[in-house]
Image 1 (cartoon, rainbow, N blue to C red):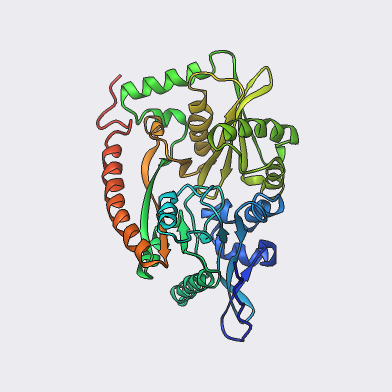
Image 2 (tube, one colour; image 1 turned 180 degrees about the vertical axis):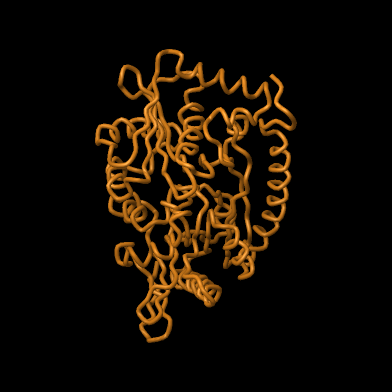
Amino acid sequence: MSEPQTNTSDEPALQVHARIVDVDANAWDRLANPDPATFNPFVAHAFLKALEDTAAVGEGTGWHPRHLTLVEEGRVTAAMPLYAKTHSQGEFVFDHAWADAMHRAGKRYYPKLQCAVPFTPVPGPRLLVEGGDEAAERRDLLVAGALHVAREMDCSSLHVTFAGEPEWRALGDQGFLLRTGQQFHFTNPGYRNFDDFLATLASRKRKTLKRERAEAVASGLTIRHVRGRDITEADWDAFFAFYMDTGARKWGRPYLNRHFFSALGAALPDACLLIFAERDGRPIAGALNLVGGDCLYGRYWGAIEHHPFLHFEVCYYQAIEAAIALGLSRVEAGAQGEHKLARGYSPVTTHSAHFMFDAGLRKAVAHYLDHERSVIEEANAELQALTPYRKGPVQD
């Protein structure tokens, strides 16, 4: 694939970076997380750098960094986390059928250009733009620049996945095809404790949750939360064994290596929260969560012993307890999973946008997405009616 040229004039310049370290960390983070109250750890410079430093992305992975920045008078005013992709793995917005259609037509789908956080189905900002009167113009320049990069690199398409809804709508205005998806998130309206949450559930659902929590630890297991610099290398070793077990069963080959988790813990210590289930002080199951400004993000889980409801306890109920204790407004528990519905997690819509350069593919995908969006909207409305929350006064 050919490399795009960098503009070197005194006018606003779009620059392509093969390493995130080539972008000043403070400049990137000023755009990615301008408000600490809504800090999203996944778009932080340190998170993306940890992926690159530990070779989770880069040569041989099919994720080739091509981060884009807009520079005005020596100042970075907009940026995109951008990757040239040679496959569709680790994205969680599935386009394999589109690739197959291109292949059957005798055309090439890869490489494609992907604006995303690798291996991370977490909604958040993707078009990182400085605010102010010129924000919309900068956003449009950034997107036009990304499309130019895609053409120069002979990519079939440009994809922006798990974008914020305002970004998504703006991309639609620029000719992108709009796609929606479904996740399940827990909302904390200001609960003081887990019992406050339980009081909002229908009686039967409340009793079910209490029973599941009791059965999860009935064999004598204890739960331990460890965060930040209190996390030891032994903790990461234990968690990584769980991650590898789950990854081998779900993906065949896990995306992340052991070095990544140590790098993450060193770079973003306050964002890391491990929740372990232990037997006699030895971890037998665990989940990694990242703490944002207003959200707890559940990411990875695994176990070496299997007990009924332990997954729900460690990943969902303990996450709710942690979010309440930390004063966070929601828990995002990852991709898919209607089983989360009965545990207090409600359906939400996720957003992605796609630009196809091939007219035939664009027409077919547009037709498909029109139908898919209506199906997801109807499904979310139906599932919302099935949440465990009571519709009237509590009755025990």
